[in-house]
Length: 143
Image (cartoon, rainbow, N blue to C red; front, side, top):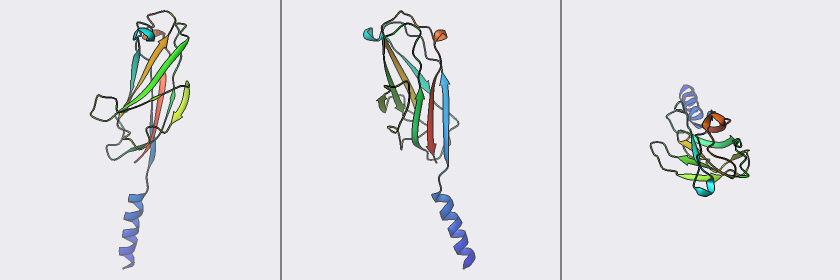
């Protein structure tokens, strides 16, 4: 009886405990050919194919995006989540600060991908990807 209780306790406690992990990627954005006012933008994809395939839940997303070297006077930056095995944006949020974190994606599957859309206003174009500094996205999750 004591062995049965010990085994049940071990099974129950291991299934309740969650493991915390994260993935972090840095990427240089694509070339932007025209001003955001005229529809110009670039979306940088972020994903990690090494994320565990069992149930994962995002607990926090943080970012660090960089200004562009073209003299833009304003930026509209949007971060969108795309569900696994999909190509459509599922949920988006605006990133007003160059660095920060959000809980807007908490509870979503960490195997999904993100797109960071950068729309610059003003300055000179094109802004080549070779001129850009890498942006970074970190996704904290548990499973």
